[in-house]
Amino acid sequence: MKKYLYNLPSIIFNVVETIIIFLVGIAIKLDIKNIIIILVVFSITRMTIGSAKHYKDWKKCLLWTTIIFTSIFLVAKVGIVISIVITIFTAIVLSGKGDIKDIYLWKKQSKYSDIEKYINSNTQSERLVKFEEQLKEKDDIAYTIYHNKFNEKRTFSEMEEELNMDSRRIADKLNEIALSIRVFCNI
Image 1 (cartoon, rainbow, N blue to C red):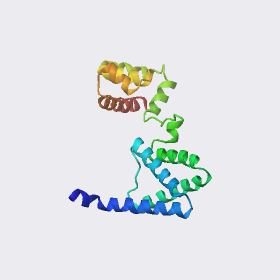
Image 2: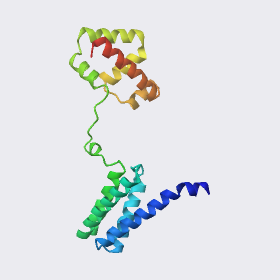
Image 3: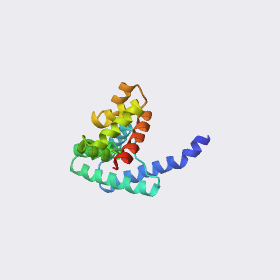
Image 4: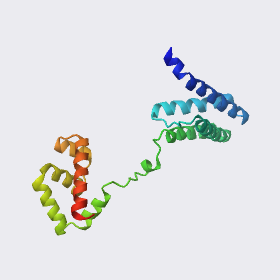
């Protein structure tokens, strides 16, 4: 019973929100059938994708949900097929899976980009060669991680397989290496 009482405010909010969305659709003079289709398609898409984004403030949630569904309902006045496509697209975007960076395969800049840039432009510098030699002498695993990451451009999963190490341990070692090279080479 406690579980139901704990979730009661959320259930009431969701019911009220759905009623408001439904009333907006009716105010726009959209067929009830189309309103239901849009709500069902949105819900199914969102549940299928998972990881939905949520606002902590109920007012923001209500406002943005109303704006989004009003937009979709207005598109439905043009054509229900277009509206269904827009509904699916909206649900994907709101789930966090529709990031434009993912679509074009843009990549966030690595936290090691300064080191990568330095290594690429100073491959034969005495300081870098000396750093690599000292790293290899002191810690062979650290040198292998350094070489794989910065020279071979290997991913963590590739290094995990080769070194038979957990990616967290590789990341910790890589952070140590990054600090060392930044200090040693004045990056």
